[in-house]
Amino acid sequence: MDLTTLYLIIGGAVVVVAAVVVGLVVGTRRGALGRGRRQRELDRGGRADTEAGDGSGGPTGTLAPERPAEDEVVEAELVEPTATLERPETPESRLVRLRRRLAGSQNAFGRGLLTLLSRDRLDEDTWEEFENVLLSSDLGVKPTMELVERLRDRLRVEGVADGTRARAVLREELLALVDPTMDRTLAVERGEQPAVVMVVGVNGTGKTTTVGKLARVLVAEDKDVLLGAADTFRAAAADQLETWGGRVGVPVVRGDEGADPASVAFESVRAGIEAEVDVVLIDTAGRLHTKTGLMDELGKVKRVVERQAPVTEVLLVLDATTGQNGLIQARIFAEVVAITGIVLTKLDGSAKGGIVVAVQRELGVPVKLVGLGEGVDDLAPFDAATFVDAVLDA
Image (cartoon, rainbow, N blue to C red; front, side, top):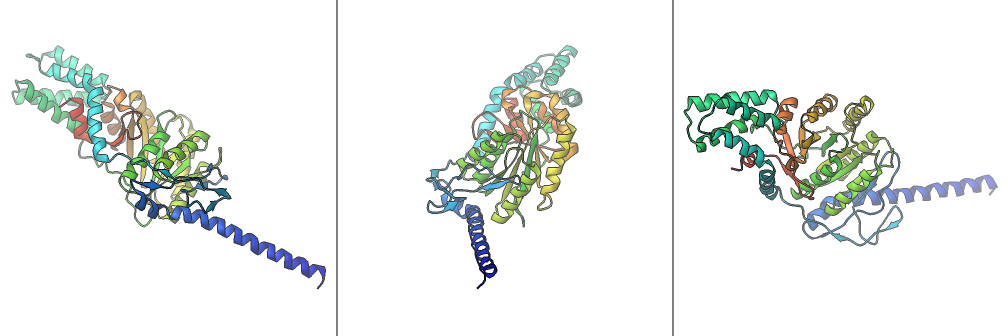
């Protein structure tokens, strides 16, 4: 046998061995994620696996899977012992706290309105004060004028003379403004493919935290979730998501700092499809609405994701304390990525509850979730009647 033939045989053997090793590694990683659904079904409320490794990866995003059994290896790292997962609060109990927290923060607004309506004589000065209270709540000029006009007409035509009836009329008109007919359901039901939810917003609105809290909401509804850390401008954002996911057994796809956000989002959806999860939540980088290049990049992320699966929900996170400035942000984001719902954070920290009406009027889309505080389960579905009752402390 000559040397050339010997070299060919040795080279062929090396290629075969390398292919086997790569296949085992990829198969192990996919298997770990694919076991997520079965494992979480067994471990709801008990023991379950958490994520392994530091989750760092290449420019297209690599998988930080749920922790497999201790005798398995993921990317040549030994697995840490399993940890007890947290049980997120149910949506029902969140709604109870929603009313309690809102009532505590919005009372000044509600009491001001009720005090004015309970006066013996509703003269022009009283109605002017009423308008000022509404405007100071960030309701906006047009909704304020509509509400005052409707209240004046109803109280006069119906001959309302007592505070109890005036309160009921005010509740009905406020509820009409908030619009209980809007569909506030999150589009997170799996079809042939996972539902895909993009979360967008400006810097400092609590966007990444909102993604983590939303994952908890969905896990509490027994949905299998995967998180995509497409905010690659901040290394801490991906680390933050891994921490949120690890507490409830949700895997994360992340890339290196500075990686292409669109490719990480693409990998996230691909991994979600392979694992047959119910929902893929994609966290995007916070960006100033005035920066055209960054806004264009956000549109690119959505287009790239939709090569694999439709984006079923685009949630815009707004800080409720920013008031009317938040409407400018909302308008520009809506032009780029077609917003389907609003998440209002820090609502309990502001007495300006009128922003709910103002932003819905501006975009024509509903407020679907509200952030009520710093707790891990302080994100709740928005309910129009609960909100109005809390404002009026009914």
